[in-house]
Length: 158
Image 1: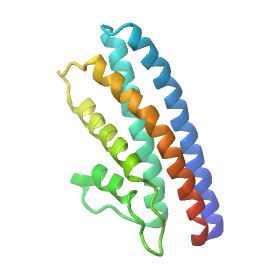
Image 2: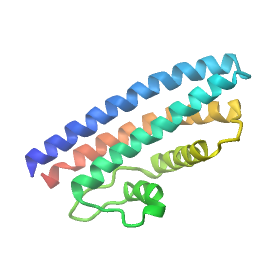
Image 3: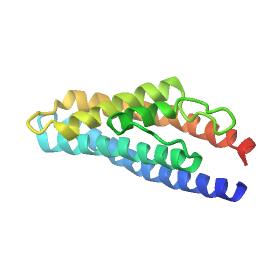
Image 4: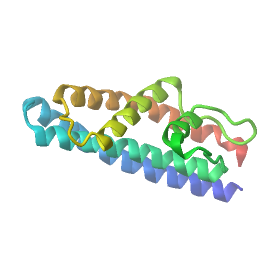
C-alpha cells in the first residue's frame, strides 16, 4: 500500500503542476481583459481557461476517488457528488481534501463551468469573468493549504 500511496502523491503533485500552469495563463488573461473590457474574444478566452481550471481540479479529485475506490453512483449528479466527496473524511479510508472555503470557491467555479458548457447563445459579461478569475486566485491559496494538509494526513493510511 505504501508504494501505491507514493505513486498517488506523485500523480497528485503532477496534476497540481498542471493547475499552476493554468493559473499563470488566467492571471495574464485577466490583466489583459481588465484593460480591454469590451473584448469579447478575450472574455471568452479567460472563461475557457476558468472552465479548464475546474476540469483540472476535477481530474485531481478523480485520482483520489479512483485510488480509494470511492465510486460515485449517480451519473446525473456526478460533478456535484464528486466535489462533495472531497469535503468529507471517510473514516479508516482517507482524510478529506477540502475545507469549507475551498469547497465554496470550487462549487462556484463548477457552476460557471456548467453554464459555460451549455450557454451556446449566452454572451459572457467581462466583469463577471474577471471576478471569477480573482476568486480563483483566492482558491489557489486556500486549496494549496488543504492539499498539503491532505497529503500530510495520508501518512496513517500507508
